[in-house]
Image (cartoon, rainbow, N blue to C red; front, side, top):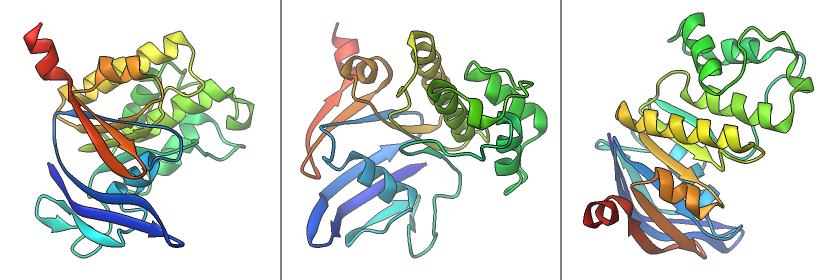
Length: 220
């Protein structure tokens, strides 16, 4: 998969929140977005995911324009902002309900995804009783369970303990290994540098810096 952003700009109530962004993103790579709160990271993710449309410019997936040829990326897993599930259902039942929309995966695959994030797929605890960290882990499981070509994770390490952070870093590496295109945001620069191939700094909706981690690793 190749995603191309051409002069992508988003204005909301007269304010420019994403400003003339040009990017080319490819499968088998992990891209990080960093910057202060409100700089445009999450808005850019929403644009790429097709949840909102650009005011100007275009987003193209392998020659198909988002919002014209396709409404959403055809094979995407996403966690943006806070995970939200049905409080009266278990983690497994919540994911099974989500998986039933496309009917692509088995119960075993759902259980494997829950196990990957460090939760017990047989746990009968209702989602409303989950800690913040457990909720975050289930959100990550929902994003990866269908083995999507595109994985978008907005602050995936929020509310996670050290073990949860390490699990998340391992999952990102595994998603890259199977040739997914991964886009993440994280306030922790060290985590971004550990998992990303390229890190983009965003200020006032503009990409102001590109840091290529692979090149740095190869030069050492």
